[in-house]
Length: 245
Image 1 (cartoon, rainbow, N blue to C red):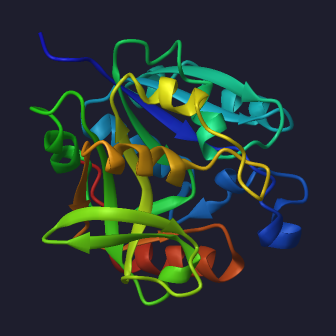
Image 2 (cartoon, rainbow, N blue to C red):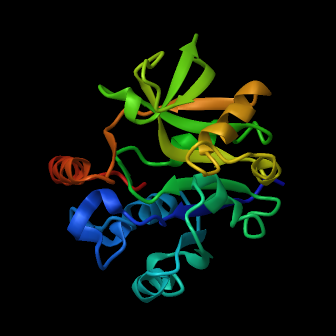
């Protein structure tokens, strides 16, 4: 039997870089095109056939997500919710999915990632590699804003978080695929200088064990966590609606 696949949407954080727009709401509820931002990762997952999905958010706005999505029935999925009591990094938030993703592959999307490509090809990347992790990567003009992948022959040699001197222009997007042992990896992490558990450290663990593969995105991709990138995301979606299946 093939390993089950479950989705994890990470929609926490204070959204402070968006200023007044997030004073009374979660940034993932702001509009991107005709939908709230958080619809985009959900519709990507459902379009790829993932119907068991966990949404992680903070204490302040979890009720808003429950009111928006309910059980997930109207969206063609079954939704579970977990509260991240305090900001501790992406890897810490993913750790809350351990029981939900027990003995399953987890497809993880950061809730402010807006991208054109459907998920189906990314899912197939690890279909015959049950022990491997996978990341989406995209060439960008400003790689220093992101985790940057050093590549050789299409293989990732290392990932450096927000480097001052990037070794490439390939950014690691906030779309990941992990085998069940990712939660064992998270338990070994130490907080970074920011006091957070970094997802780049998780990915570098898989690099070091020869178990990380990558998918080069062909369509557009952006986060939407700043005022400029929020406007950019809306412009992209207006010009070319994303493909959900």
